[in-house]
Image 1 (cartoon, each protein chain N blue to C red):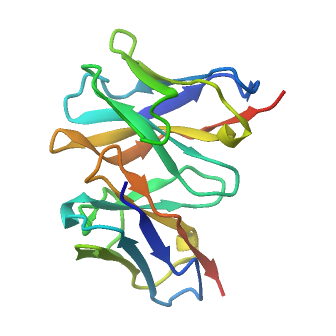
Image 2 (cartoon, chains in turn green, cyan):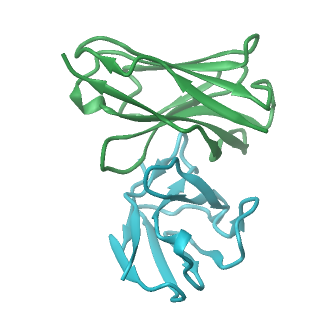
Length: 123
Length: 108
């Protein structure tokens, strides 16, 4: 049974870096059919796609976040990570990790979501 | 970046009624590259449809999707209590993809 579990600090100070990890069980992060990525949702708002990574390390990032975001993968321990630098209050959100179906050699639709973790940016 | 605009913002309907949700793209999206997700309040979203009209595993056939080019529709033929939620369309023709702003289906 596939499970994705986000972990990391729930509170980050402005200008610092936000770091989250998504632990994957029930599937191998080396599965060639999938990308692994992050989506966020500010309180009371809609969904924003942050980006995704393939097991090879290939990444796709949102153009609005690309200067601040890094998504990496650890195939040995079956997890992937998100780092977002220089955070502000606007980065306060529930952060979801998700598995994305690979489609035409790119990330397609997220077919399984983690439960999400709230990260608040505040001093 | 492709912008997806969903309408209406809120749909007020009764159980048993038909719901029709619209998603319009700012530029053409091949029908193979459009998905729909459902988010029940307090829960993570879940995949409903991909490639515009293919139901995800376990999704009942009262959910159907259609469309091509810039206009897509999600139809719920007979609303059940568990269907009252927020629905998001998502395009993935331009990676990493974008979501619409959502349509809330609420109980009338």
